[in-house]
Image (tube, rainbow, N blue to C red; front, side, top):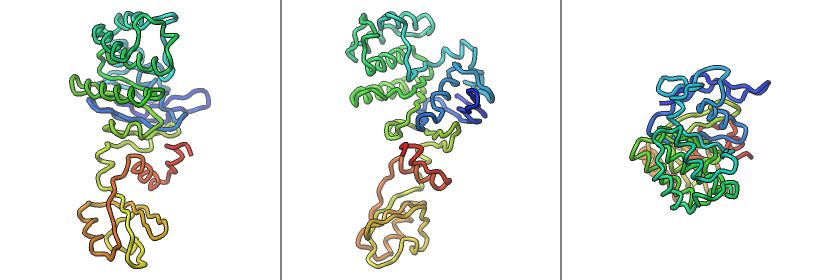
Length: 301
């Protein structure tokens, strides 16, 4: 388990992380979202022991990370700005990482290179951005660490490669309990793979919840009333948000699905339907209730 308590990091007069407390449980995918400059990369660099915190703690299974080599061997950090040795080939990088990571699997590394269509003796400097991202993922998976920290790892990958990487992560989670921590500015990218999501904004976490908890008890209704009745007049309906386009109403409500249907069934309706909310819609709703304009935070509007 990874735990940060009141984690703070400053760069001169800029506070990149402001007392961030988070718990990352083993065997789950932890998604960290936020716009550029929200503090995602700084958070991962603190988790990786690259940055020394100015306040608070970062621990893996109770052990401080910064300057503890043995603890650092338990994770692999895929930076958004990847670094490879000058003039190196993929095989050179495998040899380098094989010295540090005791369980580095060269056979798996070469097999994944072939499956991804990457040449093992080609200079990495000639690779495209997407090819370098693929190589970083292959190195990370071959290192057989307990954790993989991913900073915008899917950015630059085409849809086929994104799905391939997600499948590999899922395989290692099932087989050996891998825990990926994925930072992204794209919530839609993370929706189908994350177990827990944290929303980082201006150096602090606005919201951190399990996906199942987020989706439980919140529903979207699209409906047309047969009368001029307003949704707010439906007795017992716990409305969070209501919008309309002509006579079509879109209502976000809290409550048990069966109870919501019972309440709607007793009204005079032209039609109504319950529609699943996307994770992005749930985040927007939850944070608007808390007083934040999350559309600007997530979408950069």
